[in-house]
Length: 91
Image (cartoon, rainbow, N blue to C red):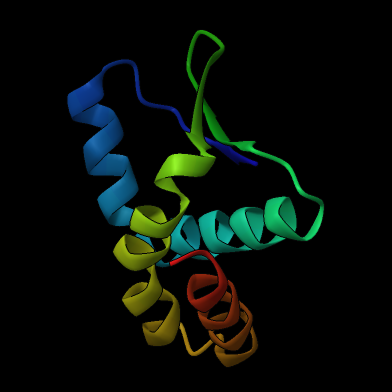
């Protein structure tokens, strides 16, 4: 799970942009693990003050698509293959 230092949404967006490869990798790992275990909601991170960030199953495919290219950029090809398999199954 990701921990963010941001105190507001603007800072969160900036921090997520700065850590984009890490964030996308963690997100896709979490989605794949959730689907492997038939879980419909996954927490991705926590921001200052204890507010959690998560993704529900109806948004899994969109989230895969949003983050897939950055995981390729990070050259995590095993995770790309695993993600692509799940994307095919849930689309």
